[in-house]
Image (cartoon, rainbow, N blue to C red):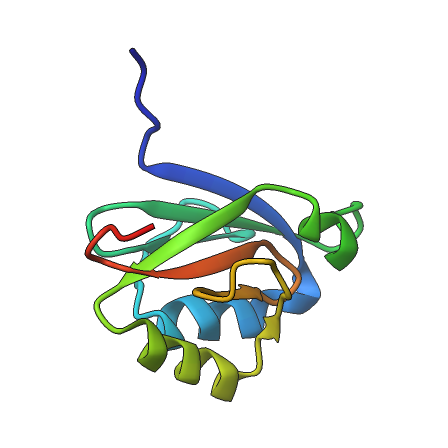
Length: 122
């Protein structure tokens, strides 16, 4: 048996850096970690999961449409409706999906997330 680690790396266009920092640091409450590289931001979620985001200016990245077809991630929270409201106020792009019990959204220039309760309910 294998286990998924606690690190994930993404590459985004440099133009999304300010909004990305606001989303992960302010809206989602991640701890901003010291980065060993100027083009890399590190965000630590509760529980120790670390998201590394590399920003590039002159290299191709996935478009918003390509991100919709890439891997989707899940965010768990004690109050999904409160987080959904906070994300909507921030201005994320809601993503329509056949599961009406969850809120799906696309981060600025990046991946799709689903908001789910901490209790583990599917």
